[in-house]
Amino acid sequence: MQTRFAVKGEQLGYAAMTKAGHASIFSDPEQQKARVSNLTNATFLGHVVAREIGHLLLGANSHTPAGIMRPVWRPVDEEWMVKGVLLFGKDEATRMADGHCSPRQ
Image 1 (tube, rainbow, N blue to C red):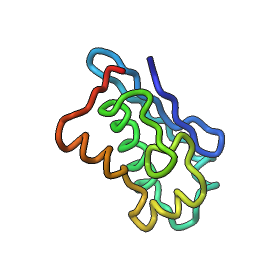
Image 2: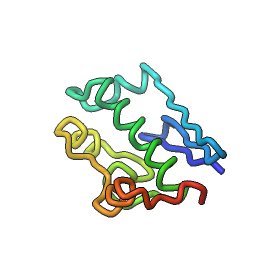
Image 3: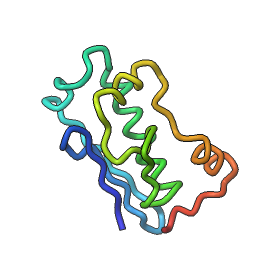
Image 4: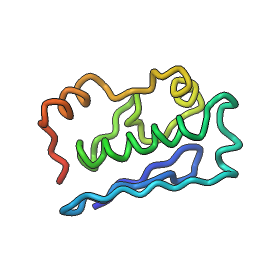
């Protein structure tokens, strides 16, 4: 089972729920030009990596209506990345911090 992730219709990565867990991240320079102007590649890719690790820890069906685990990021989510406020939800953060994750869903 794997979870695919996109923003503006483009796939950015996926997390495979294998025995060891595996995440792949894709970077497309053309896609990056369309992003919010003051969002750096490092900040954007850091959020992509954090989200895919979230899938490995929280499970394939761990999308949420808000925050870093939204199924598809919107331009406002990218603005929140710049401000440092696109985060995991409180419940997600607690589950990861307490080790109460069930990654093999």
